[in-house]
Image (cartoon, rainbow, N blue to C red; front, top):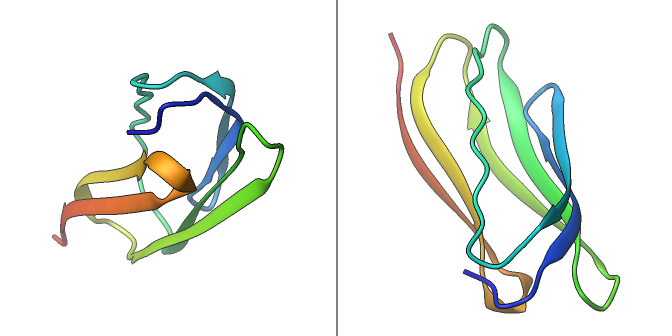
Length: 86
């Protein structure tokens, strides 16, 4: 988990979900249905106003489970997936 807040955080999963500021240790959760396949990505601005973009996993239509995008120190994004197809 990072030690500085990040701004304009946007998760793209075929649709967009965004928040203005994410503080260190703070978490957001979004429940979605993947009716279409999607390539996940996350973008945000760090404290130095650099745009950070991370490509996440590809998700097939109809999967279920959890996907986490964790923003760590130095802007590194770790994707953790626990998904299953039906």
